Image 1 (tube, rainbow, N blue to C red):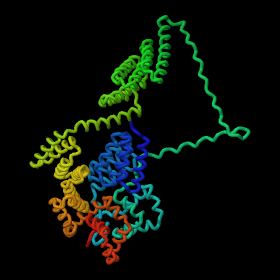
Image 2 (image 1 turned 180 degrees about the horizontal axis):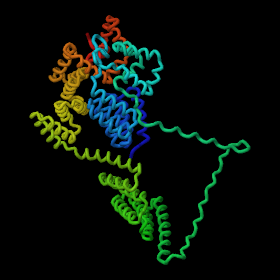
Image 3 (image 1 turned 60 degrees about the horizontal axis):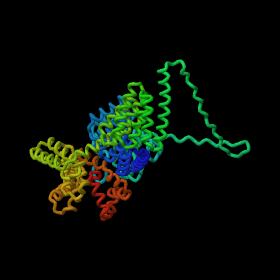
Image 4 (image 1 turned 90 degrees about the horizontal axis):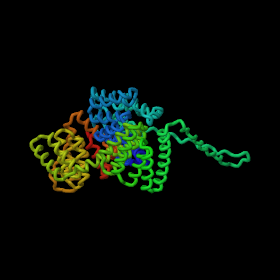
Length: 589
C-alpha cells in the first residue's frame, strides 16, 4: 500500500536538496518518494528535473514519460519530456513533445517558451563557450550566441527567484559588462547571483516543485464564554432520530405484503451479521447474512458483506466467487454502480492476496468501468508496478542469459551491431546483476553511437562489480567519445589502481593525456566549444568553479602568475585545475 505521508517527506527533502544544488541527494529522495507511493506523477516530474540538471537526459526523459503515463492532464509532464529531448539534441522530437502539450494546454507559458527554444536551436547556430588564453572563454567565436544576451534577461525575469535581482544596480552593472565582454566572467565567479544566472544561461531551471502549496489550515474558532466571564464549552444537543413511520401494507396483495416484510427482516439479519462480524464471530456472521439472502435474494449488499467475511478470514477463493455472484445479482436488479464497483474492488484485493496480479488488475478495471474511484485507481497503479517487478523477477534465468550473450558475441564479431545490442539486452533482462554482460552491451551500444546508453550500462556494471577493470577501461573509452576527457582520466586511473598492469587502461590514459596536453593545438574552435559545453554540464566542474580559492587562482593566472604557480604546488589545488583544463572549461594558451 502507498505511504503518502512518508512519500511527501521524501519529496520535501528532495526539493530542499535540489534547491541547494545537491543533485544526487535530490534524486535519491525523489526515488524514495516513488518507492513509497509510485502513483504520484509529481515525484517522477521532480526527479526528471533533477536528472536533467545533473546532465542525465536519458533518465530525465524516462521519468517525463512516466509522469505523462500516470497523469496525461499534467502540463509539466510535456515540458519535462520536451526539455530532455532538447538536451539530447533530438530537436524534432522535442518540438513534437511541446506541440503535444500545447494541444492540451494552449496557454502554457513554459511549453511555449520550450517550443520556441527548441525551434531556435534546431535552425540556429550552436551556442557554447570559446576564447583563448588562460581562463574561460564565453563568446570569442564569431557567430556564437552570447549566453548573457537578451535571452538570459528574459529567463531572469520569468524565474521567480532571480526576478528581484533586476532591481539590484550592482548586479545589473555586472550583467551589462558580461554582455559587452563575456570573457570577464572569471572575475565575477565569487558573486552567488552571477553563479545563479550562469545556471540559467546554461539551460537550468529552478522550478523544482510541481505541486501547488497546500492551503493553510483554517484558524480555530475561539471558545465562547458565559455571561459571568467563565469559559465553558457549549453542550451540543444530540439530534434525535426521527421516528420511523409504520408503512401501511393493508392495500398490498398477500404476496407483496410478504415481500415487504421479508425485506425488513433481511435488513435486521444483516445488522445482526454486522455486529457479529465486528466481534470476529465469522461463522455466526455468515449464517446471519445467509439468512438475509434467503429472505431477500435481490439485494447484493448481503452477498457483498458475506464476501467481506471470507476476505477477512483469508478464504480468498470463496471471497472471489461470492464477489462475482454479488455483481451478477446487482446487475440483474439495477443495484447502484458504487455497490457493484465495491464488489469488483474486493475481488481484486482477493486476487492480489492470491498472487494473481493480472486478474487483480482486470477486476480493478471492471470496478472503474462501473464507478470511477481515485482510491481504486491508486490500488490498480500499485498492482501494475508490483506486477512489472514480479514479471521481471520471473524472467531471470542465468543459463538463458549466457545463451543470449553468446549469440550477441557472434553478432558482434560479424559486425551486426543492431542484432548484438538486441541479444545483449535480452541477456541483461535474464541476468540484470551480471557485470560482464553489461560491459558487452556498452561496447555494442558504442558501435550504434548510443553513448548515453553505453555509459549508463557501464556505470551499472561498475556498481555491480567495482573491481571489474575491463569496465573501468570501457568507461574511460566511452567518456573520450563523449568528449569528457577529465572523467576519462579518472576512469583509467581507477582501473590502474585495481590492476596496474592493465594494458587497456594504460593505453587509454596515455591517449587521453596526449589529447589534453596537445589537443588544443589541433582542435577547431567549434570542437573546443563543444568540449567546454560538456564540461560545464558536469556538476563536479560546476562545484569546482564555485570554490572561492579556485576562482582566485583563475584570476591570478591573468593578474598574478607567480601566485598562481605557487598555488599549483598544492596537490589538491593542482588536481582541480587540471580537471578544469581536461574538461575544456579552462583553456591554456
